[in-house]
Amino acid sequence: MRLYNTLTRREEEFAPADGKTVRMYTCGLTVYARGHIGNFRTFVCLDVLRRALRHEFGWQMREVMNFTDVDDRTIVGAQNAQMPLREYTDQFIGAFREDARALGMEPVEENPRATDEANLRAMADMIKALGAHGHTYTSDGSIYFKISTLPEYGALSRIDQAGMMAGARVDADNYTKEDARDFVLWKATKPGEPTWDYGTGPGRPGWHIECSAMALRLLGEPPIDIHAGGIDLIFPHHENEIAQSVGATGKPFVRFWVHVEHLLVDDQKMSKSLGNTYTLPDLATRGYRPSAVRYLLMSGHYRKQLNFTFTSLQQAEESLRRLTDFLARLDAVTGDEGHPEIEERIGQAGHAFREALADDLNTAAALAAVFDLVRALNSAIDAGAVGTPDVSCIRHFFERVDQVLGVIGLRQAEEQAPPVPAEEIERLIEDRHAARRRRDFAAADRIRQDLASRGILLEDTAGGTRWKRK
Image (cartoon, rainbow, N blue to C red; front, side, top):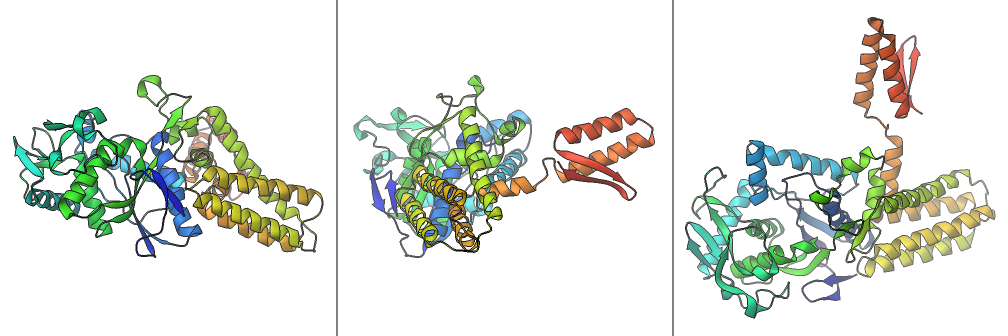
């Protein structure tokens, strides 16, 4: 498999260092708000990468995806909500898990939180190691990384080292490339902020130290195989992660850096002021299912910007329908004769699918191979050139590709699930019974009609009320 490595700016042959297990770190959500579809463009693409490495190329996975639950934004959000930090971030971690399940993302092996004690201790230990190697200094109780002590600083983001602001400090967790300067590792305690002390003085971690420490604590000795995230993380976050990890261990931090390009909305950057920052529930209220969202987010090459429109989301819906309609056609195949040319055509499609994935995770080409096969097989079914012996081979192919794509099974599960949560249906049935007992038949009819409009039919029997899908 070839992957584009941001560090070297070229595609390189990839295999895990030990030949067996891919050690991968994915920068997860900063949990100050519910994740939006721009976040999930990155997470879905990296889920497809994980699935390809695991199911198509046969490697074991040990992946870490963190939650950043302490940084400038989470602290301000908790303060504004007048909630404890942990309680404030819990709600968005829960929402992320819910959305990830809805989008069919495979669970990763580790989901650490920055504020877990083991991780805070690892951060403190890393800061101490950096200090022992002469990479830090203290000012006003905060500890900073001195970028002039690491000559290779800027290699990932291609910063002009001559333009770096030597000796100038920045306390913000995020800043621009033009602002490259010494960055904070441990922030001194401020009124109203959470504080810890594991040997680095009272305070809390800066954003960048969190991922470096968690990656090495959970994945082991560097270099790890893959570090991935959105393209916006290259600087300062990933650049600073390299500085911290190399400075503390004296070893290269990561072999392959993988970055996913931005998701645009109607050719514009997502912005709250433009009202184009959509979450999965926002799209659900407009009638779009998560499987269509997943399909759209992975349909373009991960290193190219993807433009989200409601037209493109509808097109994703139609593409998924073509897949499921084709698979439904197989149930009607009745011929007893097998056809060797069908197996040959499936083999060609499988080869094209694998080659597309091996070509820097080219999901657009992989999907094209799948739909080329659908067209050919539809024509063969029309011509009576598909028999029941061929059907199992066809189904096996689609099961194989969906281990990577993760959309067909997701759509089928959505089709089987009621359009209204079962617990809500049962509650509304009880409300309807109560309305009938008090002889409010108009209210009872409204409940029946509301459920019918959402695809649920009620049947009153001698044994009680049953419900079924339309």
